[in-house]
Every structure is written in C-alpha cells, then in structure tokens.
Image (cartoon, rainbow, N blue to C red; front, top):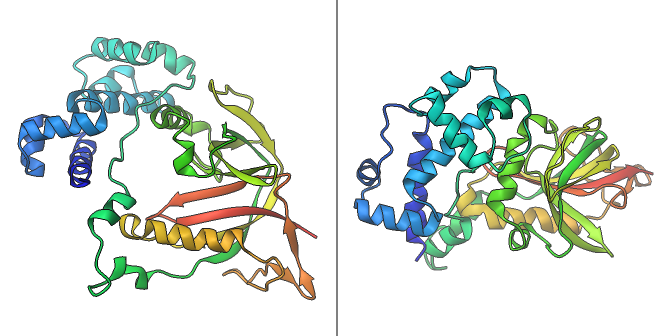
Length: 323
C-alpha cells in the first residue's frame, strides 16, 4: 500500500529539484520518464496523495519561493518574476494576488504573515518500516546496531519570546496535527523565518505542562525585543533565560531509524535523575560535588524539541536552574 507514497515522494523530490531550473520542464511526461511510471499513473497518484495537480503544486511552490525572496532580498520584482518561471511581472502579480490577497509590491513594503505553500512529505518512517520489515531470522533489524545511546549535555538559551500554538489536548507531534492544518501553520511560520530566533528556530516545537500532564506546542522563537505582528490563531509568550539539559542523539537515517532514536532520547529525557553524575562533551557536569547541581525549571520555561535527523539528529531540551 505504501509503495504509492514512496513513488509520489520520488515525484515530489524530482519537482522540488527543478523549481528554479529553467531548462527542466516540469511536465507530467518528463516526470513519468524520470520516475519510470506512465503519465496517467503519475497524474492520478500525485493528485490522490498530494491533493493538488502537479501543475498547481509547481506553480504554488514557485510562488512561495518568490515570496521569500521578496521578503528577504532587494532584487527587482521583475527579476524575481522571471527567476521563478513567470512570463512577466504582470503574470507574477496576478498569481501572487490570487494566492495571497495582495500584490508583490505591497507585500514587500508591509510583509505580513502569509500561508506559504510548503513542500510536501508524503512518505514517512512508519510507512518505510512497514514496507521494509525483516524477519528476526533475517538480516539487519534496520541498522539499529549502528545507533548510539542517547546522551545529555548542558546548554543556555537566553530570554526570548515564542510565537506558537499551545494545544491543550495534543501530547506529541502526531496528535497535534489532528487538531491543526499542517500546511497552513507551517506555511505561516515559514513566511516569518527572517524574524525568527537564531537558537529557537522555525518549527522548534515542544512540551509544556497542564496540571502536571505534558501537552504539545508548535511554532518558533523570536528575539526578546520583538514587537511585530502575531499571526491569527497564534499567541506570543515571553520566556526567561534558562539552562537546559539537552538529551540528544547525533545525526541518523530518518527513514530507517527515526522511531528508535526518538524512543531512546525521550526515554532518557523523561526519566532522567538529576542526582546522577553525567558529564557532557564540554566537561560540564549535571551535578555538583556532594549533590545535584540543578533542579527542574519547567514551571517557568517550556521543554523544546529539535528534530533534524540528518543535520543535528534528535534533541529534547528540559529547562533547569542552578540550586
């Protein structure tokens, strides 16, 4: 069943790689040649799984990239129009206004949060796992022998603000998106990337406590002096500077090992004993001689989650303060 998702993910990856390439004609026929399926199959499966046609997907992704350049560069609007495949500045302006409700020139002068159309991921580790299970008598059990044990280090995050959605029912990433439109929320966050905090970056999610129960939030950090706009449906909160214990696993293969790595890190994070002596790579210990150096600081600060499997790996950050 999930082979369809795998095939469509290959189609998406092919289209994404060619968004800015003028010589790469992103048509169904060319895509079918690239991925080895008929144009009819490509069209049917792409629309069924992505919810849009290939033509619409490419057009909206190019608009998204153009909007980012309007916000973050001083290139002429005409040059941006042609760079992203529009025949003229007028054609770009019409498409931009239809998608976002304002002209490119107005958006550049007053860049408000807009729902950018994000690239899609339709093939996930649990689907990969279901397709590629090996019997216990067989081979490698998903390369788990190459994984490492989760570790802990200490990090300080200065005072900042956080713009996000704090869900009172969701307990993790998966349940959060049952209550919210992933494309809409992520698109808005991406449209504000240039305002984001250098440490609490876009799509840094995490947990907070409601009556001693962990609940999930999603959004991005901004500097402590941020006074700009807050998107509809989001709120902004101020958070003090704090030390954090960072429970982590280094980069890993997302498709093969995501579930195992997350389980290892979260097992250590949520069951960690602050009285343990567990130095990090810098030599900073999580406990002082004769007793614990830290105590949890989760009433004042929230726990963060960093999930960039093949860049930094997986991290869960729990706030602490010195005794």
